[in-house]
Image (cartoon, rainbow, N blue to C red; front, top):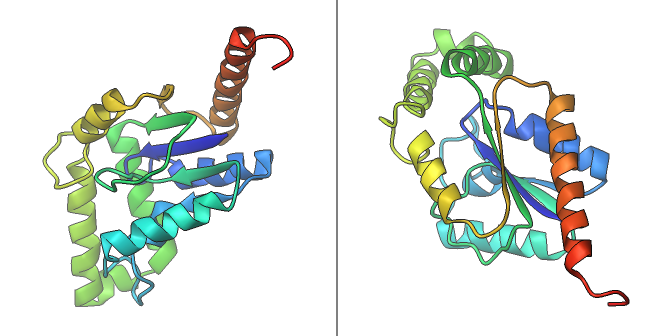
Length: 189
C-alpha cells in the first residue's frame, strides 16, 4: 500500500503518518526532509527540485509499501499512490497548534532573536494564508484542485479527530478498497 497524507501546516500530517506507519510497520517519508536542506536553523534553504524528487523516488522504490507525508504540489514525481488522505482542521485550532509547536520546537529564541523572530512571523503569516488562499504555494484551494486531478481514491478527513480516530478511518478505507479489489479479481488470479 502506497499512501500519501497531506494537509495544511500543523493539520496533523506528520503525527498521523508516523502513527500509521508504526501501526502498519512500513516506512514514513516526510516531504520536509526532501524539500529542505539540513540547516541550522532548519527550514531555511530549499533543496534543488530535481535532487529532491530523485531522493524521494529512490527511497520509495526500496519498499513495496510506505507513507509519504506532506504536500507534493508541483513536485512532478513518477510515483503512483494507492490512497491519498487529506487532513483539514479548523483554521483557528490549527494556528493555535502551530504557535504552540513552534515555541516547543525552538523555545524563546523565536521571540528574543530578531532574525529568528522574523522567520517565525513570516512562517505564521504564510501558514495563516492557507485557508483564505492568500499565501503562495500551499493553500486550501491548491490542495483541493490537486486532489480533484488525482486518479486514485482520496479520503478527506475534515475536523478535529484524534490520531486514533484518523488511523481507524484510514484502516477502514484500506479494508474497503481491498474488499472491492478482491471482488473484481477473477478467482485463482
